[in-house]
Length: 440
Ligand code: GDP
Image (cartoon, rainbow, N blue to C red; front, side, top):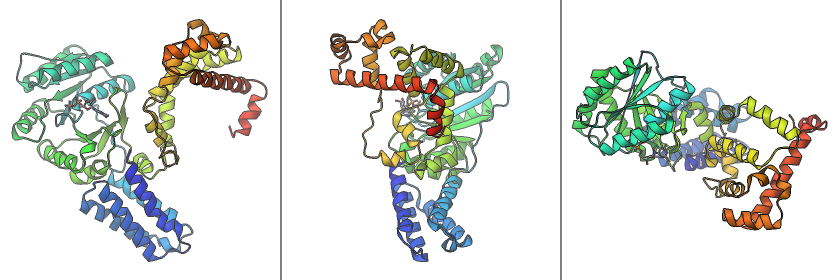
């Protein structure tokens, strides 16, 4: 995420860090580099210029040159300014009204339908709501099918009327259906076009007027950079929407959209999409994003994700198993699956301070656990429970079954063995001491 921008900003600060004595010229040079980095990230010229002007004013105001660590102070000033640029505080979602009505808008392909599903899933699992999805795209039957598929995946009902070509009627009927059946949130997916056109705008404006939503969200593909900002402006002029959803942030986006949208439309980014799966949705925190852009990681989000995935009951069960020497490959597999639910590896690494930079040239597979999972899945239940019975003959069979090499099986067995020993040690009387040694 924003790798290029992070890199360039890092280089900009090198100028300051590399000099023994920091002068006004160094600071000016750094700011010039910062501006260049922003422009390369596809941030609009005026926004980039205003940005550096503000940082410069603050630097003068705070007498940067006379402080003990001017380099660090400059990084902080840039971080604060980046946070402001992306909206400052986190923007919540308005869930008042019964049902709460949420209208989705955006171009075709922006990720609107996918995000409607993600949002419904988020509201159901994180906010304890009973959402209903409404299929408002009357032009593409495939769009209705897609929403039904998404609804099926997350166990959320989808309201659609295949014969009706009037999106206003469908939306109103859907809301009626929600009221009659105890749904407390409706998410209305609408038709998009490939580009902004008058007919589409009139249509969504009509739906907007008729259903009077608590939240109108504009979905945009972050990979489209300045185009994203222009589209946002066009939609906002017509709908005066409440918030922006940036999708595809997991892709190779330069970051321009995330950095520019707030200052152009003056509406906050509320959520981001970070993958095709239904769980790939994050609340947007401007300051955490600024930390990530500056390579400072995002430990808070990492811990939150870990907490979401690991429940205490499971942890207790696992501890018992370890104590009884019963930790097997099935448990290992389960652990891996939990880690995977936290997000893809690249994303997780980006949250660890400094790790993104350190791992920059390492090729990370999207599915880093693929081989390990395949190997474990090729084991019989007995082998998984009692790995000690796995001899060379069995190893060969497992390698063949999983499409891996025997060396890989050996390696996994060795790692598993080491891990089991380690876990046993943590449990035993020396464990507390060990934890202390490790700073726990
Ligand atoms: P719509 O036409 O606006 O409804 O867009 P869709 O929801 O059909 O999404 C278009 C494509 O983008 C689909 O292939 C989605 O799987 C993909 N997509 C949507 N959101 C994301 C995301 O956050 N990350 C990635 N990588 N792909 C996404």
